[in-house]
Length: 72
Image 1 (tube, rainbow, N blue to C red):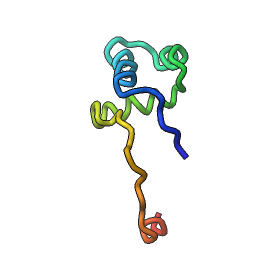
Image 2 (cartoon, one colour):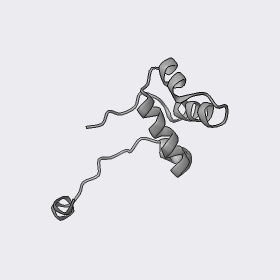
Image 3 (cartoon, rainbow, N blue to C red):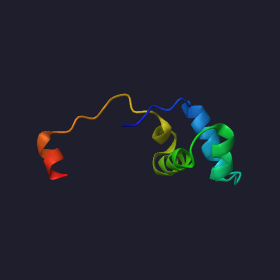
Image 4 (cartoon, helix red, strand yellow):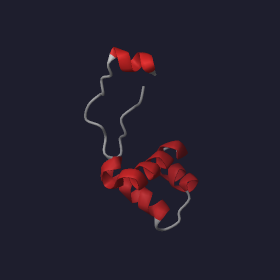
């Protein structure tokens, strides 16, 4: 189960832009801001795919039908 991020969208965006535009390494940024490299990598990917909206937390849990779960 995932844990909600304690970082705001603006904090996430700042870190993503430091990596994307200023060339700071993901490892360095993650270590200095107390997050995992995987988390920051996910934020970078989401930003590339959906922009700032990709960095926003989901407001609800998605419910899937029994049929869809069985197909998976």
